[in-house]
Image (cartoon, rainbow, N blue to C red):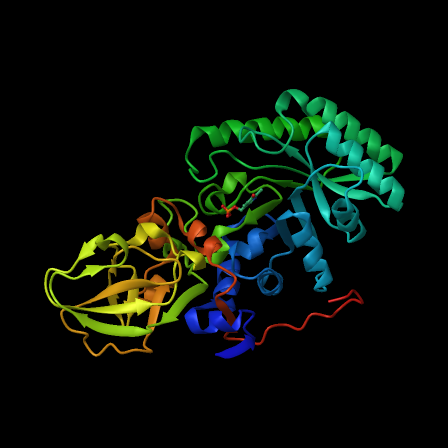
Length: 404
Ligand SMILES: *Cc1c(COP(=O)(O)O)cnc(C)c1O
């Protein structure tokens, strides 16, 4: 495997912990998902620094594997992609509508498509587009029940009328209509069909108002796997491209998906302690017999959740060992057992990675704390060293004259 990007971590992070992202897993996952999707277009969602995997590297890999759109929540991430030379269409859906917003101005200057879900947002976008002499490409967002962004059904008619007027004024172009499902992670839930029925009425209302959006998009990962009738013109894939479970009943491996991210740390101490030894703050764990303990130089400052005590989530030399005692800010202990079994200082502890290797997955860590894998990977602190590997050469992207 070729190392294709260097560590972005602090020097201290290189000692403590390491995150490796296998770009070939991202690439294979996208190819598998594209095959499964009935939609002609495929958006790779790279919000949250690509779910902690690294914004630009993942975006480039996704585009070379067959994604043709990128999605971010924040406009600043979309602009960062443009500054890295990425020219593929990008949609962003979360911003503060303000006439003085430098962020919106920069997004429009950089040809970022933006979501539009209220009369207020429309006024602001049209105003900034007029100042710039640009036509803002927008995707109208229906609030189909998530009660997050977007216009509710009862406000939809006014929104499409105003959007059509702005199109005729030459300030906006409605390129898409979309919604995000409240029951996205429970594909069989009847709330999904009801929301999609509303969505279809909303699309019809847009057509009736004279709009001609090319892209209708509704489905995130779980519905890509489970509800082909919700795919429309484009799907928006997040969790599944990272090989994480988009729903409790959907095991990524069953769909040929595997986690791309592996987190490891070196064992910095191995010691034998007698029976009756209290471990970590407040001695919440006490050994019942002589045991060997291993010290791992990662803690909750690195995103290790406190709730993993007692869980066998760490693998060392192929053996799963439980976390013992409270997780500290920079370190925690594992119980290696009555014998160290050849485990030595400097051996690599795999925290989470591809379960096919015997390691715990980020989803296993998530369920240990009553959450999901995405919360685990999104918590990983920037101080961990990062590297990228791939079984192929990463495509070189042409810089298009923008500053890197
Ligand atoms: C996060 C997000 C997605 C991707 O969801 P996954 O479940 O991670 O696939 C799609 N669309 C929107 C609007 C999102 O916020």
